[in-house]
Image: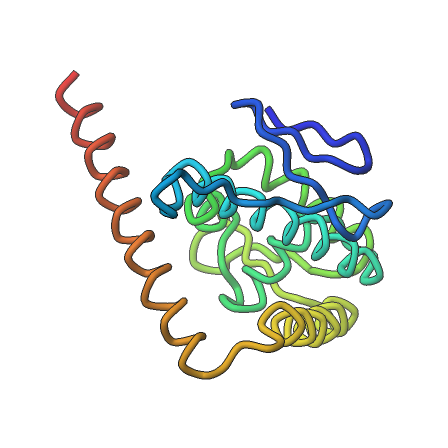
Length: 188
């Protein structure tokens, strides 16, 4: 569970991510043991806090587009895969078809997308972005580019490459864990 009291983001395992940009929070400080090494817990805490802060900041920036977070994800998905079907969206985003249907209805009602029946199969809707939706996508791309620059401000090219390699290692480890979970579920 994640709660937010306006200053701190409290994550279910009990640690607190302080938000510097709200009401002058102190930020997260890493603990070092007596040998000067950093614990795995502190590194994971930093990663989680980074992800939570990033999401909160990006949502604040994206609020100016007039599209809510979940709807925004759908709009970007449709932009990257024109005429994608509702079922394909649900599968790729790992959400129910009903959830996608509700969000698409709201986007359609507000004029960001249009849906039309697939001529080859009347059971499927093809979804396309309207001009209004394209304007939101272009505005969002500018916001993402600006935020990316700010987040990596002060990093050298070498530091960015090193960070990318390290994050890829973390991602590879998470992929292995996901595979272990998948295989474990298949065995039961």
